[in-house]
Amino acid sequence: MNDFYDSEMAAQQERMARTEDMMRQRSEHMRVLSPKSGEKILELGSGNGIFARELADRVGSGGRVIGLDPSEAILEMARHICPQVDFIQGDAQDLPFDDQSFDAVAGAQVFCFLTDVDRALAETYRVLKPGGRVVILDTDWDTLVWRNRHPELMARVMDAYKAVYADAYLPRTLPHRLSQAGFSDIKVESFVVLNRGLGEETYARQTMGFATSIMEGAPEFSKEEQARWLEDQEQLERDGGVFFSLNRYILSGNK
Ligand SMILES: C[S@@+](CC[C@H](N)C(=O)[O-])C[C@H]1O[C@@H](n2cnc3c(N)ncnc32)[C@H](O)[C@@H]1O
Image 1 (spheres, rainbow, N blue to C red):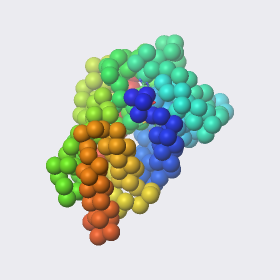
Image 2 (cartoon, rainbow, N blue to C red):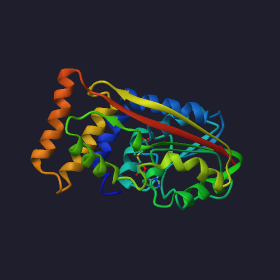
Image 3 (spheres, rainbow, N blue to C red):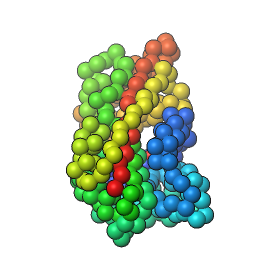
């Protein structure tokens, strides 16, 4: 996990956060979280800090936002982007906070990396105040429909891609697990990332970048296979034939 997020990947993540698809993701997450002035909010796996910065604007000077992430390289980037937020090194599965400290806990694309999701949910429950809320945004990679004219190669590429996650299919189990952790009023929403081209602003283009890095580091992919996979995407782009569709899920619950 930490090897995956070296400083080059951190810079790539920062560029990705500025794309239209990522801006929409943060806006959907924000809508469900619905932060209020004066609240104290914890963001797990705060990454580049851009969502935390938006949260800080919403809670105002009377509130407080803390971003937590295990990666010192990522925390450095976040502190640079968002000096008004406290970024703390830590693990979502073992939170360095007192019981009942926060009005809300948020996490986007982070629970999928955790080896013990139930422990992280128990920790989240512990640090929330009574009536506090959790909002988790994550992806089920079984919902990916991504055209490539080499389907067997595509399947292998996506298997390697999904292996980066501890659980690439997490959202389907989260409602039940949130309930088991003690949360009530559990809600699930979804939205689709849908790209018909590979412009720099698309999540499809970003996913291509991640997939290419993964293939380059995986000996089971020959140079010829890497080139064949990429060339098919670029040819589809030239022909207007790109199709990339992926569901995001937003799960919420109350303590
Ligand atoms: C895909 S990034 C998402 C970043 C950010 N939430 C966003 O949506 O842009 C996953 C983040 O989770 C962090 N992470 C990985 N394992 C973690 C853990 N055990 N506890 C907290 N964060 C973790 C990574 O360092 C990384 O910043």
